[in-house]
Image 1 (spheres, helix red, strand yellow):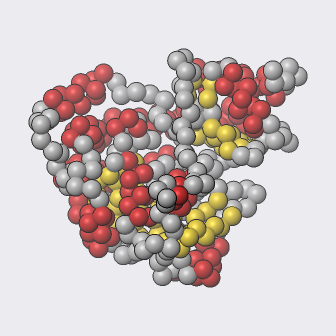
Image 2 (cartoon, rainbow, N blue to C red):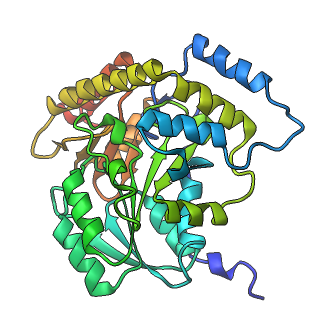
Length: 354
């Protein structure tokens, strides 16, 4: 019997199961829920929907609102059920089986999960000890291995590092393959090194965006693919007919039309990240290294990572552990960040982990 054999040995992505009262600093979500004023606007828009009808298959109004927000043409945008669906489409529908996908390491683990699920061949470029790589290293590996797709997050999840736009453009212009740049965290990079302005310059470029991070809408599952006319045409052929629910379309439309709310939310999260970063830098030592970050989280290297992760969970604080010796810590509220620091300080100090 062959049923299920394809999944033998496959890696499962298992989010943490939270207990009531836990402080959630592991998933890179926004620490702040929508205010009641915004929720009421969303509920009013949802209430206007016909629940017995399928949603707009093209998410036309939503894509136009997204395009207006970023200064794009709506024809260059397609909405998805989170960025995950769009990554899945790339790996399953846009590439022939056994295509070669170049990934960076470390990077967002879901890329490899989907590549393996759809039986693609993964080529990996390892980052250096400072968690960086270069455009030249990516280009050389792509050419040497004749890859069909390069996919990476920028800024990077989980490292928080970023590749400036001119270097990303160098990659796109130098390779004979598609390049997918996942900009889920770009709103937090104050210098704004987005490559969205290049989508009509290079027909091999696709940019992914999400509403789950800076826009604080993780619960709605909404992402976007942005590319040239041909790229978006391919995406539309590959997606399911009604991939974004009417409720999600309604919520996204309200959020994207309230620009000041989104910009203020993002600015607050950047401020919280900076305070978390500065706070953790005070704990830095030969066994506790804090990396610079362009995102809403801080990445830490320590030989005590696994023990610290378990210790924090015992104290109702959840951060992300990445083997063998990394912690990824999302910026939370002021109180959450302060409590996190105090627990880390105790664990790293004379009292030790207990």
